[in-house]
Amino acid sequence: MTRVRRAWAHLGVLVFNIVVTHVPVRQLRLGVLRLWGARIGRDSSVFRGTTVLGIELLRIGTSTNIGFRCMLDARGGLTIGDNVVVASDTHFIAGTHEINSSTFEPLLLPTVVGDYAWLTSRVTVTAGVTIGRGAVVAACALVRDDVEPMAVMAGVPAKRVGTREAELTYSPGWHPIGF
Image 1 (cartoon, rainbow, N blue to C red):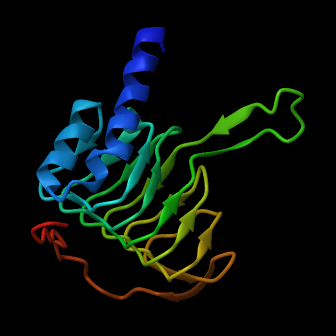
Image 2 (image 1 turned 90 degrees about the vertical axis):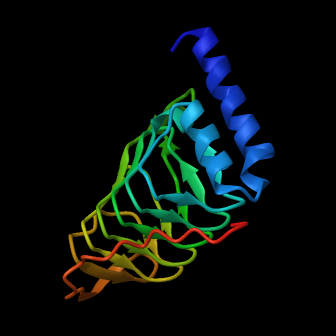
C-alpha cells in the first residue's frame, strides 16, 4: 500500500471512529464506510458506537445488522454474509503477533461469517475463524476455531452445544430511526 493510500485509509478510520459512528443517521454511517472502501449490501445496518479498523477490507452482505458498540477489526479481511445478526458489543479481532519474532511481527488473518449466522451479545471472534452458514454463537462466547454450518456454540472457548434446525428464510433488516 502506498504512503498516500495508507494516509487516506488512516483518515477514514479516524473520521468514522471519532465522529461518524456516533451520528444517529444509519445512511450517513454506511455512506462514510462505503466512501472509504467498505462494501456493504442493501438493507444492512451498522448501529452507533461500532468501531471499524481496516475499512477497505470490510465486506457486509445484504440485510445484515451489526449491533451497538461492536469492534469490526477488518485489517486481515472481514466478510460478513447476508441476513446475519451480530448483536451488540461483539468483537472481531483480526490478528495477533508472532510471539517468537524479535520484531513482534503482526499476523493478520481473514475472518468470515456465513449467511444467516447469529452472534449474540458480547461474542469475541479471533483472527482467521470461519463461522458457517446459519451458526449461532451464544452470549459471551469466545470463538477461536472454525464453526460448522448450523452449529450452536457456547462457552469460553466456544464448544458445540446443539444444532440449529430452522429453514433460514428470514431477512433481519431492521432500521429503527436514530439507531
